[in-house]
Length: 125
Ligand SMILES: [Mg+2]
Image (tube, rainbow, N blue to C red; front, side, top):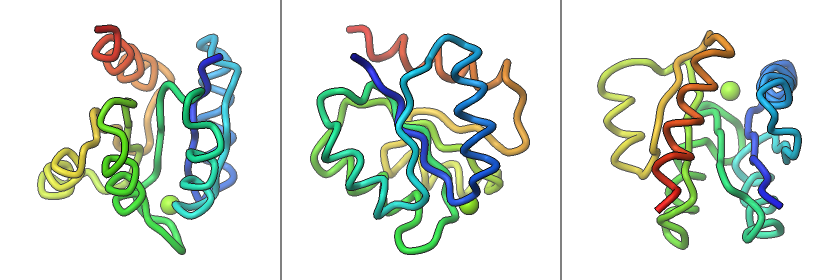
């Protein structure tokens, strides 16, 4: 079973992403409120998680640190960063850390769909 890990410290944003994913047909999601929770969820569902969607700015462990942690053990699982940090410098930093795709808030369901299809495509090797 393939699950999507959805990480954001805003419960509203988590709900928006999870509802959008459900409408796109991805109903099996695992929510986490920060990088610490996300890392726990990742370890507990390691073989089931097919995509990670994470915010950048979060307390305890931010999205960038979380991405680096995942990439230290897992080069394969696609990661999409959803953030208000839309600057060129931030995008490059995220990509260097191992993010596969990038969405700037606010976003439309269509954008999430396209980015998701793009990374799922790259995962089908
Ligand atoms: Mg945030």
